[in-house]
Amino acid sequence: MAAMRDELSEPTIAIFPWGDVIEEFLDPIGLTIEDFVKRMSGGWLFGYVIALQHVGWRPIIVFGSENKNATTRLIHAATGAPVWLVRSARVMDACTPITYNAAYSVRRWLATPVRMFRDVIEREQCRALMIQEYEYTRFDALVRLGTRLGIPAFATFQGGDRKLSWIEGLIRGRSLRICSGLVIASEAERLRVERLYAGHHPPIANIPNPIDTQEWQAMDRRKARSLLGLRQEAFVAINHGRIDIRRKGLDVLLEAWASSDGDELVVIGSGQDHDAFAALVAESGSRNIRWISEYTTDRSLVRRWLSAADVYVTASRIEGMPVAPLEAMACGLPVIATDAQGLPDILTGGEDSGGLLVRRDDAAAIAAAIDRLRRDPDLRGRLSRAARRHIEQKFSISAVGAALGEFLNKAATGVP
Image (cartoon, rainbow, N blue to C red):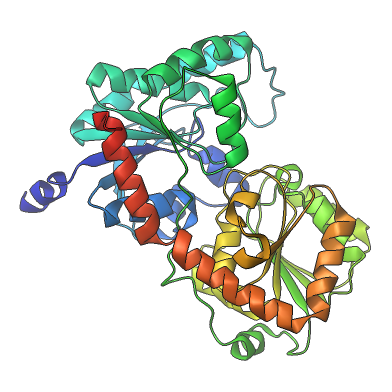
């Protein structure tokens, strides 16, 4: 009982990640709820948890689950945060084509397990809500629940879809009026929200996703290559994360690699496009591609690969503020990134921030950037040092935690 009193002496914030059910996230990457609780860490979600803990908040994580018949409370191993799972269902299964119309939006609103979410919020004595994606039907239900309970509701942008139907457009503006604040790291998205919801949006904070700079730092490069079986003299490019061809631009990445002079491309990850990506790799004609086709929760292994590589390449078409390139930069890797929203916000100073920006869907530009870094080890070294320095200054747990804590407190109390 004393431990529970100590926990509740800190203000509790409930984080609601995107999705009808947690299985929508876990199934495509081949993980279970047990994996999520016992082995997963990192990413924007657990970065937020650690950053909020750093400044005296007590985060809990709340998901719907189609595999739980009763509300269940678990503890996340790496952070100690409670993870609540409430009975819920997907509005559509993965094999059913979706028609984005008003009827579909209404079904999503009605499917939100508001009563069970309310039970969790009250049992944990939450004093704030943080909702992933405001352009999402569940945001509307949760922000109104927060109003009924008398607690502030915030929302964050992580690259989610825009509103899906005319009825969402009608409701969303009203929801934003009663929302306490938005966290949007993408300048392009901030401008869109300010323009579309002029006069109807809450305060907006430009706060990036955090990275643990103590954990994410490079090991000895030669040792890393020896352990991974990489040639010491090879020029190695790397990409890691979810296998989502359209959003992550993986087709463009393969096209760029095929016309570059790099020695080995390493891709780490799995996802809903596993089979389609396997076909693309086979058909691309690209040489020297090593695809580790699993979603690994072994962060030390990912760190080893990042330490062994020469450059990190992301060819994304759609982003919010991805954590994967932040992990690479923390390990001192120069980054080649497209101008998909969120990525220019990471590389705000261009080369002085540790990377090279190129246009989306421009395989030739990506290939040219790869070859430029391959030919110029001095440039690689300069970008490597700049990348690490930039992460330490702008994206550390302490820096992001302080910004989040200040914003939550000011927005919730109405302090300008």
